[in-house]
Image (cartoon, rainbow, N blue to C red; front, side, top):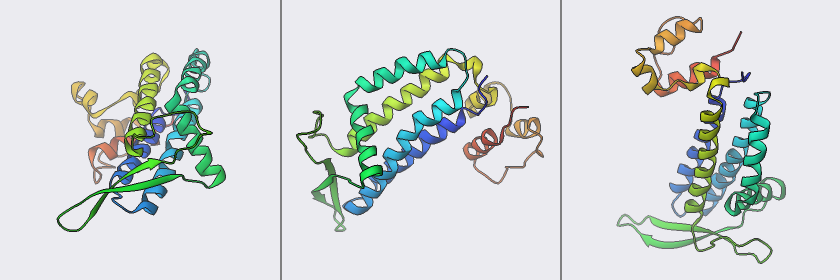
Length: 207
């Protein structure tokens, strides 16, 4: 059984989605876009770190992850984004440039962002904009986490597997979860349902 809630990994995916959405909404503010991209690649990179921390000691995980890690290392896009994360975090570089392609009726400029070409890098599609490439990379991580969750479901904290949909199907309420964890019923009632469930998962501590 894992000794940490699986929701910690899912939170990192949510964090990555958050910064990706901020990149999309940055418009023509190239500085803002670069800042959000830096946060995005850092959050993405932490997904696999947290995955290993949560699943440490689970029988069969080390062998399974070793195979998946080899696949990631052979994936051109995944390797490219790890390099961009290292470049941004360790060297301070953020080689992204913008291209203004339209202007709205209210005067706002719309922009696309692209990675700077470099002969020293392995070839990716530099004609693809940063947001599209980032979305595809996030998809790779989402598949990895989903496969892990499916493969090791019996070794993951049961509460971590709960979703609002599965609770509804099983006639379980958030108040039931609060009571199960030793908190007063309605303790998190002021929060939206998704946030309530996420908070309860993160407060879950196995005996």
